Image (cartoon, rainbow, N blue to C red):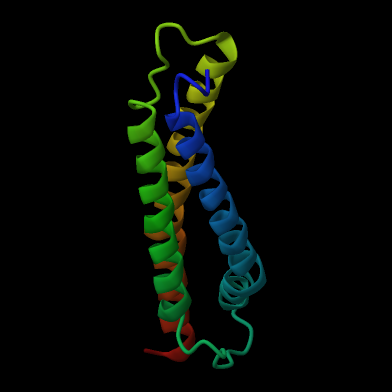
Length: 131
């Protein structure tokens, strides 16, 4: 399939780039952002974090979300919106199906963070500092 469909190589390259970016992104969330939001949620004594206000890491996270979305859009374009060619084997079809499902879950994840968690984090910080 790879010889007749060189786009699969490009899909793999974009996937590997996305994978590396998501691993770094998740580490930042788990090590920096989420612990800070938990501190705000627990209403413990507030201390100015080293990153300034929560808007600073949130801007980075949202930018990374946009980049992940762009990479998935590139993969979608390369795969004709995850439509396997007529002659594709079952493995090829399953791959496309799983890529489509991953993109859907990624969009849901980004929505929950950008529009719910991050908004709540900003509100909590404002309450904490009395702004």
